[in-house]
Image (cartoon, rainbow, N blue to C red; front, side):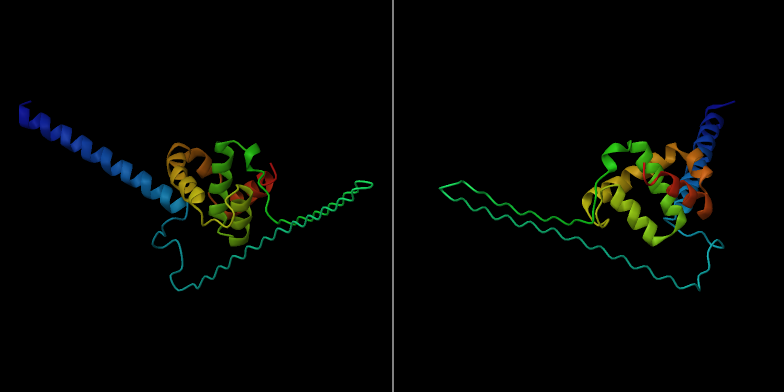
Length: 164
């Protein structure tokens, strides 16, 4: 085989590997719901998603000191509808929960998971950075994605693990 034949073989192999990599990337994007695959969804379907996020914090502190008997009255009232229990979950578990809930396509469940993971209403930089890191995680965890590849399987996974 001459030099040109060797180069052609190498370029053909590299091109083939590139195409395979592109196919894998598109499959992951389709499975995660980032892009819509032709024929897998109804283009005439209307979809409406509404997210409501309410949080209120009230702290009232009154301190009265009487010089004769040193009485002190303190009143504190706190009401918060958000909780950050995500610190007990591993990064891998967070990504699994995030991946599964994205497959369910349930906006209320998605907001519940986003809040569980500590991303508030999902519009902050921390959520954006997590979503970027999630793509790399997904490329390494295709087996898990296949295990929750239907909305029913994904919902079952989320419901089983959202309180972890």
